[in-house]
Amino acid sequence: MAYEAFVIRGSKTIFLKKAIARNLYNKGIDQSEISELLKLSQPMVSNYCSSKEKIPEEITDIAENISQKIINGKAPDFHTCITFSDKSFEGNYFLANKNEIITDENIKIVNNLTEAFLILKGKNISGLIPEVKINIAMSKEKPTGSNDVAAFLNGFVVADDKIIGYNGIRFGRSKHLSSLLLELKKDLDTNAIMNIAYIKDLGNTNFNVSYLTKEYKLIDDKDQVDILLHKGDFGIEPCAYVLGKDAVDVSKKVLKLINRLKNEK
Figure 1 (cartoon, rainbow, N blue to C red):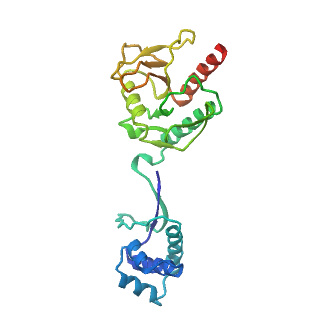
Figure 2: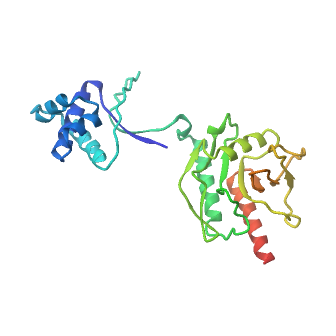
Figure 3: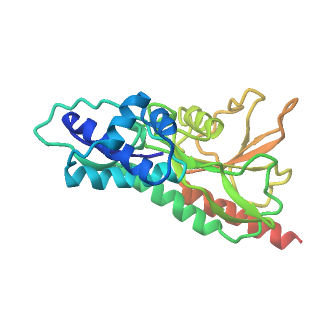
């Protein structure tokens, strides 16, 4: 998740807090509350609010933006940023964790996951919905850990037995699917995985099917597997995992399962 940040030179920090204090006070915020929000003493806040010192226009613009966010219920936090660059960092930025930095491969994975969702969107998956959230995870070609695996944040949104939406795509989420996918990649040529409900009969699907042990280890040494079945354990529901070269490949396999279930009715 990216976080909004306002970056100014250290010498202008006092101007910024002074402008924010004035804005909040003029909007009816009590000085004691301003003191707590800006981590200033109450005498200092009183001094800032009564000061007639002229503040640079670029600082007043940033202060107005920040003040409005505070009015809307967001709590500010102040950090010291030290840079070693010829460039002067000032203005409005968004901060991201290292694994969220957008690279060409990250964009490709996000786009692939989005396309996979669109393939399944609106399809009736009544026979494939597990008790836990249904999700797809996709990894980089050469992952070094779970931060190199992306998945839908909080899984798919399902209503009336249909996938209707999702709340975003993030790297380093869906720990179970990510860890399982990374483990499977050691033995199988797969970059994506989707969890669905356990299916007892897959005899007429032409899929390569195998099983996982209770500890989620491969039972056999097949080179290619489309669907892995886990019979469950105490407190763990039986489920199936669809594997593919990418998220779109996985969604197309799930679509075949959906069509088969539809024809059997």
